[in-house]
Structure formats: C-alpha cells, structure tokens
Image 1 (cartoon, rainbow, N blue to C red):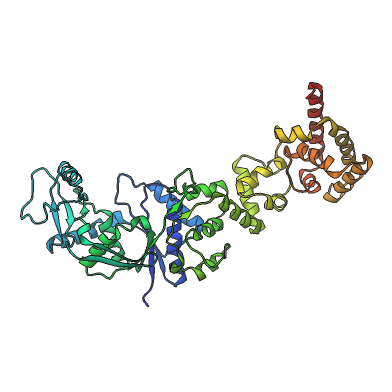
Image 2 (cartoon, rainbow, N blue to C red):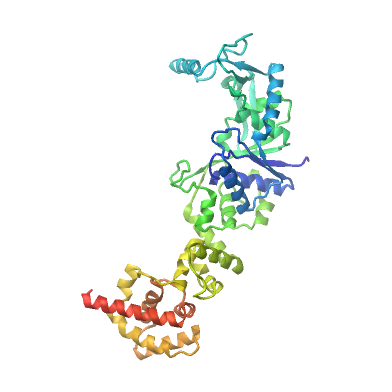
Length: 473
C-alpha cells in the first residue's frame, strides 16, 4: 500500500472555525492511524480576502490543538506559475477554451433558462467558436467538460456517488486576470502533492464530480474521497455564531483545554462503540472513516463544558496551576498576597467547567471581594447570624497555628456553645469571606484565605448585618 497523505486546505479569509477544525482533526487522525503524512495547504488565491492575520490564526489554532503537519504550510499564491503551465497545456490540447461572454450576457442566459424551467448553466456559446475573441473583453478559461456519460466516485462516508455530465457545465478554471479558480487549483495541488485521501465537509460534494473530470483530463489517479457531514446547531439549523461557531481560539480564550476540543470534535460524527472519553493515543488507534456517520451532528455547548470539566479534574496539577496563574495575571491580579496557586487549584478544580470559571472562583483568595452576591447576602448575612459570627471571630483571633484542622475545631466549639448546626455558621462565613454561598469545604477555604483576611472579612460582614438591621431590611 502506498504512503497515505491527507491534507487540510483552508482558505485564510477568516478565523479557524469548528467545522474546519474537525475536518483537520479527521484528516490528521487518518494519516497518523495509517502511519502516513498530513499536509497543510493555504488556498489563498483569493488575494482580496486572504490575510496574513487569518494565516496566523490557522497556524496558532492547529498548534494549540497539537495537530502537527509533515509538510507545509504550502501557499497556492506561490504556485501560480505551475497553474499557468497546466492551463496552457489544457488550452493547447483542447481541454479548455477561452470564453468572452460578459457577465451581463451570462445573466441574460440564466434568466431565460429560469423562465423555461431549465437549470441555469453556461450555454457553451464559446466552446466551439473558432475565434470568439472580442476587443476589450478579458476572457476567462473554461474547462471542456464531457457532455455525456456519468461521473462516478466512491465516497468512504456516503458510498457510491454518480452524476450525469449533462448536469455539469463548463466551469471556469481561470479568471480574466489569469488566476486559477478553486476547482482547478485544488486538483493540480492534490496531484502534485501526492494526496491519496481527500477528507472534507460534505458541502464540497457538488464540487467533486467537476474535480473528478479534471483529474481524468490530467490522466491522474483519483484520490479517495470522504465527505464528512456538516455540524448543526441544537435547533437543527446550520451552525452559526449563536450556536458557538466561533474561532477555535475563542474556546481557548474562554478556558477550554485542547484535549477537550479534540475529544469533543472527534465524537461529532464518529464513534467507537459507546466510548465517550478518548486519549489522543486512543483516537489515533481507533479512528476509521468507515465509522463516520452520514447524518449531521449537533453541537452541544453543555456537553462541551461537561467534557472540559472532566479534563480539568484529570489535568496535571502543575500545568493547571500554570494556566490559572496566567489567567489571573492577565486580569492584573497579584498572586503575592494570597495562598499558593497550586493549593487553590486543588481546592477548586472539581468545581469549574472552564479555566475562566476556575479563575473567577479564585479571585477572593487574592483580592478584596467587593459586593456580596445579592441572593447569598440576603439569605445568610442576617441579624440572626451576628452572634455566631462575633463568637467565631473571637475564637479565630486566638488561633496560633492557622490550619484547616484548628479552624474546624473552633467551628465545632462554636456550634456546640450555641447549640446550633454547622451550616448555621458555615454559610454566613462563606458569604463573608468569599462573597458567595458556594466554596470548597469551609475549613479548607478559610485556611487558604488566611487568618488576617478572614478576621477582616468577618468584621466587614458584621458591619453589613448591622447596616441591614438599621434599615430594617
């Protein structure tokens, strides 16, 4: 069997979105599974829309996801001479021809065809004219598509696909300025780069018969095609920004881990039994295009968060600490006046679905809490809690060695003195020291906050209660 070579060939005209990332992942996994090669190609012949910023975004996104490539990035803009060479050969061999029809004439033909309930397509006016040249008109180059017979190819996902050549027109393969169009350039590229498997979204299915005919015209073997189904939103509509179709780097910035995105995306349209969680090694071992579903896959933001929470729980502690520190420092938070970030990570890692949430939940350890959560303060910072908070403040001020154990001992003593329950003091304490009603176990939380800050914040909560009582609230 020849060396398998797949490719990811985005147009650098925008961000790297979820659909593109999944295509890249499938192509990368297929190559790695078979010990083949994965090629990165930038299809940047649209000079007006292609930007270096988009190229950088694509490279950064692939690097973040760990999708390394064996060759590339190869830019189509660097291969213009090669396209012109093949175009010249096509013209010489009668496989293509110049078309001088103006846009207005083409529009008129289409309108007439629609009026007659005929599928709009080019009427091949210039196909057999000996000298169709017209002064002042820059001709495009059209491929001389076969007029009869079927175009047949086997798709690893969709099975055999056949379309009649009568349904295809003579597509433009070079614009008036000489730049090649997508369907032509991609075939020349795939041949020159030895691509054996073309894995892409099923929105390209209609392009494939046209490309097959160009492969045949060049006497080149066809690659194996696999058109993967589209990703849709939870409402069944095409994925858009409101569903989460944003740049993959936005997910990184929101605090999703790369292993989360790989695992989530590989399961959008592919399965291996009932397994949900895959290591990268397992993905490479198990991935097979035969197990890709034909049906569209729905993007589920809640499941993505659930999966990210799983990976945060399982992540290496040093790595997670480094990521938390980075996020806190980006917010201008000083870590010098607070607990060791590694201890905060261990206290909170099972309570956060994203790194952003982990950072949010860490803030009260390193800075003043500001306003209390309104609902939590209304429920727990009430006058009835005042005596308990005053007593525990006094007990805490007498602790010589501030640990979770000594804190717990004093909490138990306070509860017994007041013939109360732990929750009656723990919840007001939580709100007092964190501003919210949800924290790790109260003794662990207070140990991390520190003795001085705990005492100060209890005093602040007592002032809040007193002011509330004075208002009669």
